[in-house]
Image 1: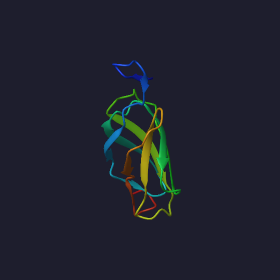
Image 2: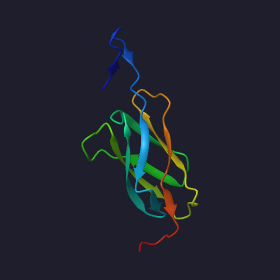
Image 3: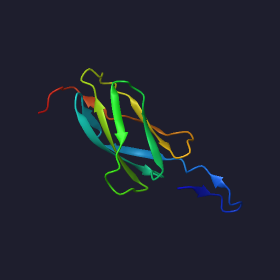
Length: 112
């Protein structure tokens, strides 16, 4: 998908994604979690970047794309500190990504 300037007809970068909130607000260390990220201009996301090497994740494409919602899968290693980390999403064509705090990892390493 490309975006165009309405006056010149030239290709312009995709609108900057704006991230508002994540649900759930926390994840359990040592387990995988599916996270809903809400905001705007989220249709053209191509990459998920994480600030902590003890977090891994990916953008999910199992639901129909929405401009105001994207799902990601995050896994926090069992020894991740409670401080956690940040993640950002990269739009098509690059540009400065928004950053949000990754959901905090809960203190337990075993399911309840």
